[in-house]
Length: 343
Image (cartoon, rainbow, N blue to C red):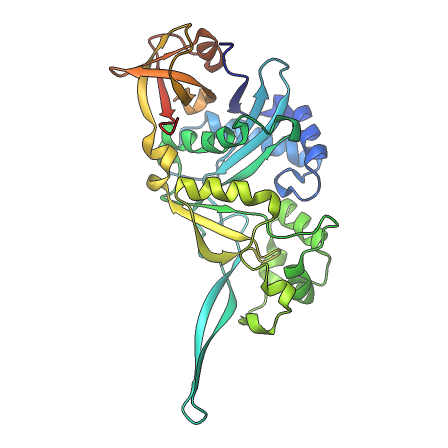
């Protein structure tokens, strides 16, 4: 066995050039990377500060994780966790509610769905920013990158709120057209979808508070094309949605106000990877025996995580020397391990 091919680690200012390259590859639809050079540098500096901090409760920390290809040293993907959302900047969505309409006079009773603006998820933690370069999307790399966020949470649960959410990108055409935005947002914001999307990623979102409709929007009044995409994710996000559902996330009947994409939520301690991860001692074993596992340095300040094989017995995880090297740990030290028992 040759050891892990990738390491998922804390991102910081030294990664700026790599993340600027990722920004170009990801394109305009990936809002987490839609930052100018100065803003990207600020985000990476905040990430470094967040990993180095030791908060007793969740605050403004933003944990940005780099997916590094070990052989080349290139950063080929990323993901992130926001300790708290909705305070700065505000976090607005549409909630789908159902109202009953009835009339005895004409003997009619039926339900009608409406969209109302809410900020119900203020004070939650959020996982997101999941991106892998196309040439590295194989052999479970994307799944491991998604799971490493929950390994980070398991390392110190106090840093994260009891409810965790994740937004999925809604249906947008290759030309950047969102049917939901054309039917709803354009009328209230008077701008193109791309402009609104960029503003949401690069400003304090005050414009959303100012311009979001204050009254319910009846879904039946929208064009069929817009109704069809409410709560639906982009085709490229179907895999991410399945991973979230496998972890325990569920659609919360809340959608993005721009593209109508679904917002998924779960109680932190019900997240499968977090719940099943165990702290064990490490031992070196060059045989490469065992099951696929995620193995993480349990110190948030030194966070590193790899997908590798591990054989667990009597509270000890035997892993290859290359795995220890990638984690920057030694035999006898403690690690956080999640084992894929489905294998």
